[in-house]
Image 1 (cartoon, rainbow, N blue to C red):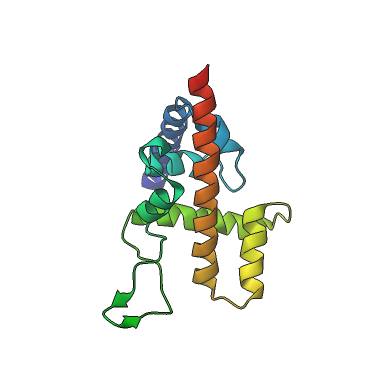
Image 2 (cartoon, rainbow, N blue to C red):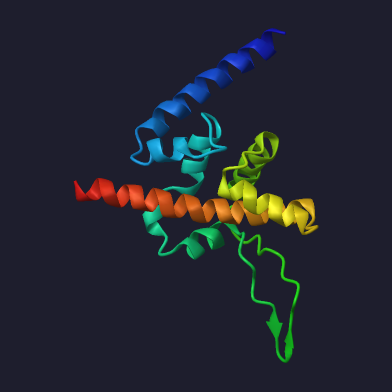
Length: 156
């Protein structure tokens, strides 16, 4: 029991430190306003992605996460069923999966990511397919909103 208490106390200190460090980043307010991102997942997401300005486009960020479709052409045969590449940051994919779980649990009907997720579910897509497709959409929105926010900060 004492080891469990010590571990819980150490975890609380680490979470507080993570929150303190993340709050010093310029994109902190805009990321924390996004749906599905809370005090634990927000700093984790910012740490996994880093500065979005290092990516030349949203496609580059999606490829970094490993959520893009790989080329599936070999010679004369062109593949029709492409899965995600999974070449990239697996910890970022895990964090995005957790954010998508928050979307599923809360079902915010006014959120575009949830609307997309619900549409893919209605099409009969498997669980992991619509979760990762929604994560792809979330990442594109993240890129656009954070980059726009950072550009407005640079102007002033």
